[in-house]
Image (cartoon, helix red, strand yellow):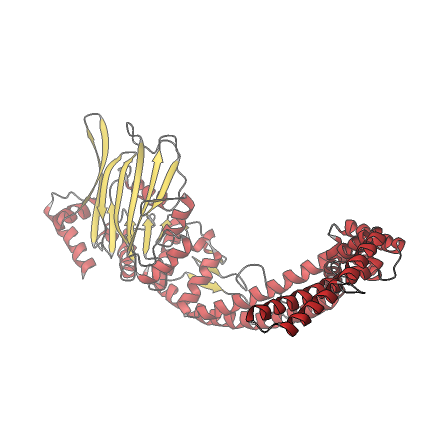
Length: 560
């Protein structure tokens, strides 16, 4: 609920600080006194576009702040609209600052935010109804949501939307695959050529480096063979080799000495003999490698050139051609299977459409049943408001969908319309086309009264929706608004004393001139002040005893 509203330097509202009650709050005052400015302050918090001329003359900026108390369920909804809302918040302060040039700033709990973010949060807290319009009922999806809350079948709505979303995802995948098919066909020919070329080349991992090294060895093969033969011959082969000397010395030491020092020397000679033998074997291996695998230099050069040519074409290193081949093979397989994928997805989509259809029919059937209940309550409310002959109907669409039905765009299986026939003989029409402001106000109030307790927005603001309402039905109008105030905080700007009499807190707006400056003051009325205000709203002289008795009688009847 709105606990406090603070306005500074908004036109003739120089300084206004208001505290509101949880029930019905009424604002009254003569035309032109500044009531509309209070509503403007609220609409600026709701995201109304700022403009030049709003800042009081002599001031640099106008500020509007609203402090709202939150319940736990409301906090989670607000957190979806802005991450500036703390999950454990118990209240939130929205602020809008309008500068002289018409630009504005906004904040949530003292932290800067975009105007759209503040408006998104505010619209979860406040529902504004003005003469000839209502925010909530202008949105067809809002009508459906209100109907679902009234019937308590939000789970059916969620189930439909989930099935519809899954169907949309499948359709998107099918569309993407089909739109890519022409491109795929061109790509398919190109891939088949590239894969065939690489498969014929049959590259091995690291082959380019290996062939390049073999070519380098082949270029120096004779020198390498000569050196390796010399090393191997000197170390291990023939008479006088190092291994022969080492073996002889080790035998001689074993024959002539048993001293530990000589034994250690013999062991070191053995280790050296093993190392020398290994060096000789390595030299022999390198000689054989230099001799090659039987491939000619020309063959190796041709192979290396082929590897490098294909690698340049694919813009990869020649050693990684096998990886490139596997990637192309995978892409080729994916494209070749795309037709099968489309067929499988189409089959899934058809099955999903059946599930979506079933979910839609369950939701529509539930809406049809609950619409009849809501219709009855709205018609009863219209009767209380002296529209006994008016008709009200909720069109939820067909309960059984046609065979060729496909899920429409958006979250709803069909439109929910509120249709009215204000007077006998007139055609049925959507509520937004009702021409008479008084009739629209009563119809709107009957709907809101029926939805009281279901509507999730905590504060309902009515800006002179009783315009065009006569005194004969004013009391019924006021009683209906008071009934809504049991479930919601309600703020009403009114000229009707029959509405003002039901207020739990009554504010009076009055304009006065001090010096050469005009100011509007908003004051909370005491019990005695209310008697005077109601009398004046009745068009009576508040100083007259009879007028005061009439005013008190109206207040007593409203509070009974």
